[in-house]
Every structure is written in C-alpha cells, then in structure tokens.
Image (cartoon, rainbow, N blue to C red):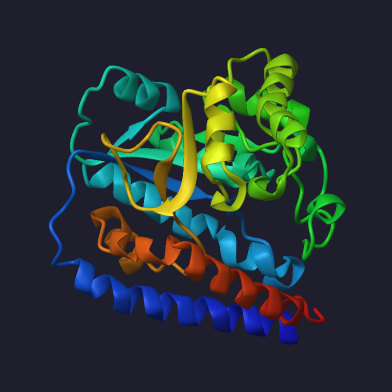
Length: 302
C-alpha cells in the first residue's frame, strides 16, 4: 500500500502548505472586478487504492463538493454559465461582485454521476472541457498512472448528451491531451481546431471555449487557439479572470483533494492568488521534474 500512503502524505503536506501560504494573502487587497473561475477534474467517492496517483490528488469527494456548492449558494456568489461569462467579456461589462464560473477538465464520467446532481440542486451551471479522443474510454486506455478499470471512465457520447440536456455546456480540451508546446504545427491544428470541429459535429452545439492541457502554452499555441475561432481559452495560471486578461489566456483557480474548507474559502477570497509566482517557467519545470520522480513511487502496489 505504499502508493496510496504516499499520495495521502502528499495531499496532507500540500494542504498544510496552502494553509500557511494563504495567511499572508489574507492581508492583500481584493482584486475587483473579476470572475473567479474554479476548475475541477474529478468528483467521486471511489476508494483511494482504486485511483491512480494523479486522480488521488485531483479528486474532490462528493460531500466536500456539496459543501463547497452550498457555501457559494449561502454566501451570495453569482455562478455564471460559460455563455454568460463570454457575453460579459464581449460587451466589456464589469462582473458583479463574487462572480463565479465552474469548470471541469478532461470529461470524466464522475462529473455527470456525482457533480451534476449537486450542481442541479443549487441551479448552478458549469462547463466541462472534453478531450474529444477520450470519449467513452477508460483512463487506463489513454493515460499513464491511470486508475483501475471502471474507476477512471470518461464520459460516453450518450452521457455528454445527457449532460447537455441538463444545461451543462462543453468546451474543447484537445483530441489527445498532449503538451501543446511540444506538438508540431499540423498536429497543433488538429488538436485545437480539429477537436472543436469534432465536438460540434458529434453533439450539434457550438463550441466556443478551450482549456490548455496542463496549462501548457506559448505564443504559438495561443495564436493557434485564436485562429481556430475560440471566444475564450483558459489556462491553469493561478488567479481570477480579470477584465484586463487576454480572452485566450484566462486565469483559473484549481480545486483539488488538498483543499480544506479553510483553503477553499481562502481561494475564493484570492488569498492564494499571489502564488502565481509558481507558474513561472523555472518553477513549473521544477514541479514537473518532482512529479516525474514521485509518480512511479505513488503508483506503488495497491
């Protein structure tokens, strides 16, 4: 059980660090106007040992997700749909105080099974960024350090249709989830423009938004997204989406397993936004190296 134990230890350490690092941010002035774009990956109650090392750290338990959504509802947050957010930006209108957009990356089945009912309970919209080539597959078919079968399923065609019928919107997250800065120009077009065209053809909806896998982008990638006709594109850069952000490089606030309820409240206030410093290229490379070294250990024997 080395793998799950190491993953649990990483989550505990991250939670402690976030709590400590969020305290200085409590004294920073709030940035207004802005929209806090929360981004999740997975919401499920699956046993830790059944999940891969990546999923363990990006999974939010349903009871915690329910608490988070109830907190938004009871504290005056206005949750926007993607369409409302894009209209707001297109018209250059300032958002109302405490505006939120809820997003999910990758398109896991548990977004529909566990997150969607909680969103529906509060009447909250959301957008799911779907990897077009992962539809109907298992994470073990397409990803390293994947989950045990049945615990890492991606949304099927029928499930995405059901989600759309509930009012949840979809965006593109490429065809195969590569690091886009390492993809050549023909491949880049297929991953970015081709994924939008495929989703629009499959589901008969207009796909206006894109999320960069791993937040990996440079000028060439961002220009390709703009040329593909997307209205908005989201990074993993820490912070809120302000009126001065480029429409194709919008910041988001990740919510994961290592976010306690206190940390979640800190993130809503912007107390951890100053950690945008970790998104610099040198620190991203250091974190990537650390993950490459630890993930084989975290996979472990379960």
